[in-house]
Image 1 (cartoon, rainbow, N blue to C red):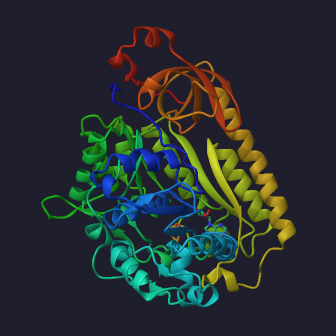
Image 2: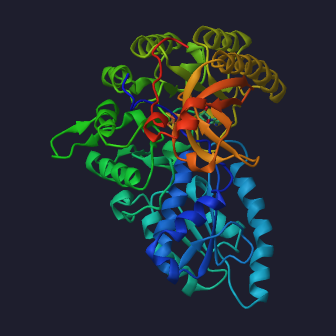
Image 3: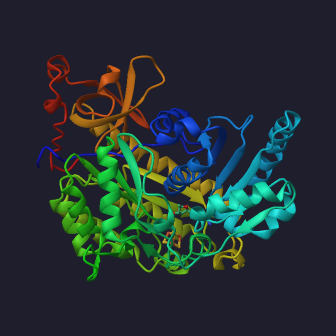
Length: 502
Ligand code: 5AD
Ligand code: SF4
């Protein structure tokens, strides 16, 4: 494996973008001097939303909006919402209730706080949101962020109580219309390459809120990746609701590249050490992608591949278009290509009609595969999705019990996986400060959070770390002494990862 190989993607705070990210980056833009208005964005849910929030801030910067870390006194507040799970809309409405006070406080000083609701709840609620929450000035769906400047100007003119709605799926491509320059994201960055989904799993709102599957042209993706690397990014996580359905137009316009080919091209970018992608669908794992896991050293040995259930009956009812055994075979092939691959997944328990035997199949699949990380959820009916109206809903108590059982098993697997890295030397991309003074946190190739005592100058570097302790959700380690003392930069960026099964 070449020294270019290695890991990680950062776990970002899912509630709001980190203030230090905002301030650091805002100061680096040319428009800083003109920035006068405070913009607070609260981001819910997935990394796609984190990415969209950053782009919304980019779009609004020329209007004089500068990111702020608190809603108090803000000139504009954006709630970038997620609709994927339970009570999403209700949570947004209660947040909007709390924000009335912020608006009132601002009004007392003679100012006005514009409130915008973006993201999937905005898309799903539409008009209803303006009716139920008249304090909202703007409701904007995920496909029209490029129109924000015009929409904000209209909302400013319209005055309170006359909310504006834009939840179109426009013909023009949102990515083409968003400004080219995004703010530096730091050592580990996200890059959105694909949006929407055509799979229509029967539990999921995404095809309705994000629309049809769309892939960005490969040339645009490569250009954005080069820009990120020029700004200091070492690791890029490619984002998409169905990222491995990627089929971006090739730079010469003749045909498409799949995700496997795209990662090969990205790996050629000098200075880009690590590539990841999320979230993928088993149906779209093709030969080319498997081969990329074998050949592309920069492609990290960690894969989040949601399976949802281990029962074929339930998988069919979910319209997943794969069986439990096809999933097992895909994982076998991936592990043949990259024996080091750590697997992660998503699970839903208590899908309508799920019996004890079906749930048992899920536990069996988990035992067979062995996951390094996983997210598991109780099924929650999402209005407008086919599964929500099925009569065989599973009682809450049963869902709760099954979730506890599944999480127990997944937790044991995660801890066991973490323990297997103790005593090993892993390359870690240090990408943020820890809570304790003198502490930095980074990611192992397998997406584990690794805490080390290290000088701040190592932030943004990939260092060898001797893993000393494993906890359920993180590792502790020591920066390898020889490297630390010599201070040799090249040695620090050596991120050799063995290809032995972990
Ligand atoms: N109920 C429970 N979990 C859901 N997910 C998506 N929709 C639902 C739902 N209606 C979970 C799936 C998906 C993850 C992002 O959220 O596991 O992979
Ligand atoms: Fe939702 Fe993923 Fe299914 Fe698409 S593939 S419908 S995003 S769960």
